[in-house]
Image (cartoon, rainbow, N blue to C red; front, side, top):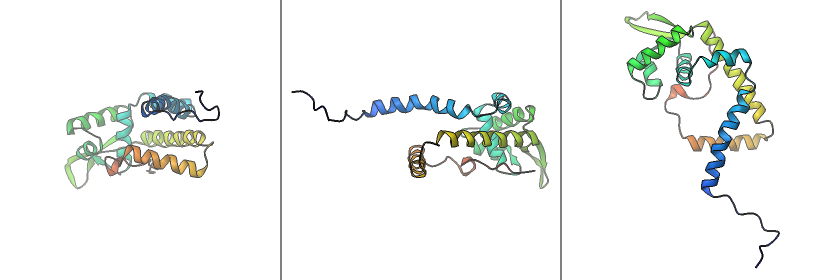
Length: 169
């Protein structure tokens, strides 16, 4: 017997789909990062993924203690959060400040440079995602977002949800 010339090819297996998904990730990242302006890209190059997570957590509050920062960062200890804050201070992205209600507490808040970096990074990422999704209808975008939400599950904590709109000083 010969296969039916009009028959559709067999659907890819789950293993093949997983491979395709993994192959798409670096391609998507490259597509998104192409639109980041060179100055923002160079400045972001000095900031690790974990430091960027910390900056987002800090940006969501006017000032955050080391304990609060440790709680926002998955599996971070108090000493790890303090070391993270130290590195961000050295990079000029956050500033230490005393807590007016408790002199024993030290808080960190975004510096003007940190706020500007997050603002420019978010604008560039939004532009990149917008360009990447240009070929999809609104319904297709909604379906993609829904499927991704089902895939990743709920966020680990309230502090890490969504993109921020960087607060003005």
